[in-house]
Length: 309
Image (cartoon, rainbow, N blue to C red; front, side):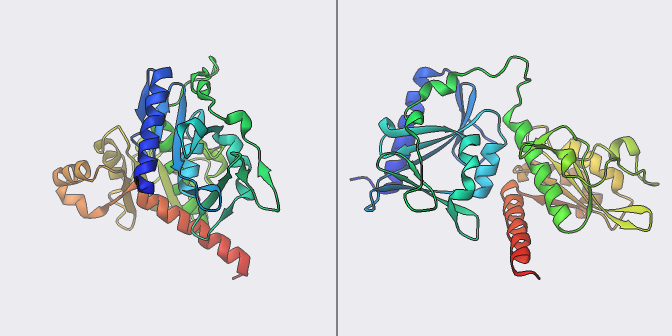
């Protein structure tokens, strides 16, 4: 008899094997720690569960993970319910449209129950999201994207998502925020819809053409001036040198806190070793740690609103 964790791992392996029979390209999305795979033309978050005594399948998914898959191109969520013969392959955007009707805890963990008829249980008596049309719809992964729409890689999507999270944190804390990538999309909106500074200000001791390309900047406003306080570079696949180099234009502003966001701590340390004279000016943050901070900031914002303090 398999333990639940063994059983779910086996079901996920079986899912990937079946997907590979239909799609030649099945690859993990390595910029994410969740079980997300690029399958054909789709990006798929895979979850598996065995039936509980309540005659339901239970899936717990954190809001941070849901937001990450939502920001990928052509996203789906695959819920394997006891067997790959009972798999729901649901377009993520449709699923997210019902997210307010799912129960969740204060930490942003959504409690997803699927009944034995393979319908998602929503809040309210006998309220269900009927999912029969998504039962074993393996061909969904083969649907081509619109030809006129440029294809966006997972790295590009997650880069914009991390920029969006940094902007949101800055806004919550009361900073003025700037990002050069105004047309990139975060949670169905352009990044420019979140920033509060349209044009990067010129600073006396920073090279403007470099400054305005830094991924995210936070400023405080004093009289009619914007004073830089925080600067962030997100590094997923382009290496760490370029980000450190852009941040270096702020090196003469000793109060500015500079951060590199990446999962490659080894590469970061190598770059800092070569940049030893200024290494104490830089800070490294893991992508997951940024996600935890972002979630905490959102929860605190909501809590403050709810209690009125």
